[in-house]
Image (cartoon, rainbow, N blue to C red; front, side):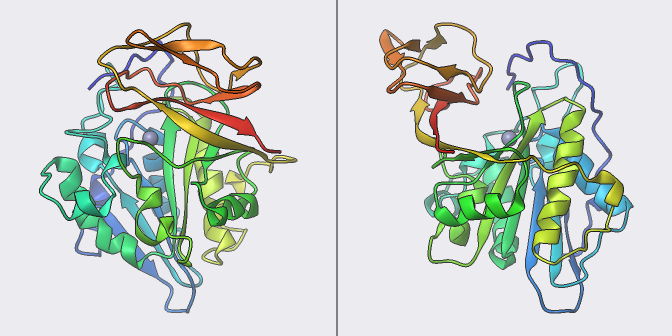
Length: 318
Ligand SMILES: [Zn+2]
């Protein structure tokens, strides 16, 4: 499946992840390092969407620099490695997935059901690993070049974790998508009573060089926050923390309910629409308008297929 690239330059090159196929967990492309000392089991996942390079580049960098836990365990996983390995710089959007979006298959009824795709099979292999992890950082990137943001999920514990991490500047609290559950909301990660917690990083535009730096820095801070590494690890890769974080609460996603959806104009994300009732687009002939003043558009989608999220609408909380 192809999404329009808007001709953004491809500044990053995919790295070779085949050295990490065997891993040591019995699941391909999943490696766990155990410090032998009690502590959190921290998991970092890359290429849940195969066309999002910065996560793979980050894990490759960590493997090559021997990033290992000083307490607890660290797991590195290349989630949709099959989609990633189909990456073609001449058609860089085509490798997002093989059969279906791997970040929409994490509801129990899908995992335990009959649906048989490359992505559901892989999710069923990864689920027992995710069940063992205490803390998850799932690294993604975006279609348009907007500031990096952290998707904290809808629960207070996710927002608190994003705040504790203090990186990046923008935190977006959201429920996810009508099309299916995300990995970051799977199992205990999406249960307010569970001690488990997860964040989803959108490190920048898919092919943008800076997404590498944001991804590496945020992942290092995530490992440090849970005592898995100390701050000296890969010191040169740290960026300055933003002065303040800005929290945007998603009030609802706009789901494409018609066969045809079109935008009234081109949006790339983070537009703040001043007036309630402003026309955004059309679900067939049904107008989609902003429901309140100062409505922020989060990650407007160019892949306009029925059942998908067209955009998320949010309010700035602080
Ligand atoms: Zn993604």
